[in-house]
Every structure is written in structure tokens, then in C-alpha cells.
Length: 251
Ligand SMILES: O=C[C@H](O)COP(=O)(O)O
Image (cartoon, rainbow, N blue to C red; front, side, top):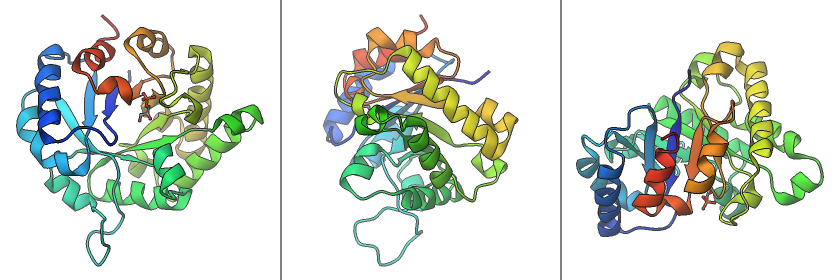
């Protein structure tokens, strides 16, 4: 049985005080939830502010990106060791916005996943096709390329902590959620590729999250599908009430 993960990606929103206010609203609304792992991902500058506020809430802290070197002359970058130092336990890697606007490639995603694992952070590796690729019938081809590229060189043991997030680019921030069937089909395909890469036990264990316009209204339907093990939530994670409703999708 895979424990679901509901992660909130706050993207480029929330200053320190805004983040603290959000946690103050969210924490009581999710208190007592033990059947779901809850993660929030603020901007780098807010990370060190949150561990004290999150203590005892059961909510984990993620960064939205990481660099692959430990230290050195790499202006503007943040290493796994520094994220741990700031209180993060997870890190989002390869989000489509980073692929689209910041030149993230399969190769850089792969370096970051390896560095995160080496640094004892849980990578949440994002993959997903564009509308163009879907309309051209290339969805599976793109997903397979991103999976094989991002996970290249890992053993099954090294892969074990990795969480995968399937986020169709056309569903992100657009209000156009993938249908339960479309999401399930992609998730089942992703699990089949993981089986090829790392074997059946690894594929049965890996959590595959869906992301793209997840809201309280559609979370339950998506989560009821056999290969959907959680959600990576953008817009709806910015309000405590809507994020808590998604966390409590099963109630
Ligand atoms: O990382 C989260 C995704 O990009 C989804 O964003 P969204 O829920 O605002 O569509």
C-alpha cells in the first residue's frame, strides 16, 4: 500500500510573513491527518523560517530546485547540503516551468536528482508533455524520454526514495485538469517504465503524483484511480482551506 503524498508548490508566491500566516491557517485544518504525507514548497528565502512553525504539524518542507554541486564558485545556486541546513527534506526537480524558462534538460534533471539523493533529500521529479506533444500523439514518447533521462545511472536501491510527479504542461495553471482516465493512463505508463528500469518491487512502491489544476472538487476522482498516489498542487495550495480540502480528499 502506497502512502499518498499531497505537496503544495507555492512557486513564486509568499514572503516570510505570508508563509507563516498560511501555515497558521493550514496546520489546524490538517491536524490529525496521518494517512497522507503533506509537503509544502516555498521559495528559498522562506525555507529557514518555516521549520519552527511546522514542528509537530506533520507537514514536511521542500525546496523548488537544487544545484548539483556541494559548494564552489556557482553564483546564485543552492546545494543539497544548504537545503538540508535550511530545514528541507524534499526538493522539486525538473518542474516544467524550469524546463520552459530556465533551460532545464534531462541531463540537468539527472544531475540534480543524483545530487539530491546523495544529499539525503527526497527528489520530487516532474515530467509531463506539452499540448503540442499530446496532440501529435507523442505523450508516451516524451514521458519515457524524461523518465529514462532523469533517472539515468541510478540503481533500484538509489531510486527507492524518489517521488515522480506527472504534470501535463497543458493542465498547469490553466484550469484544464486532465480527466481521471487521461491521468490514470499516463500514470500506468510511467509505472510500466519504472518496472523496466528498476523492476516490479520498485514500481509497486514508487509514488506517482498528478499535478495540473488540482482543486478540492477534482482531487477525490483523481486519487481514486489505482496508479495516482497523490498530487502536486500549485494555485490551490496558496490557501489553507483549499489545500486542506485536497489533503482530506478521502473524507
Ligand atoms: O507544481 C504544481 C503544478 O505546476 C500545478 O499548478 P496548478 O495547480 O496551479 O495548475
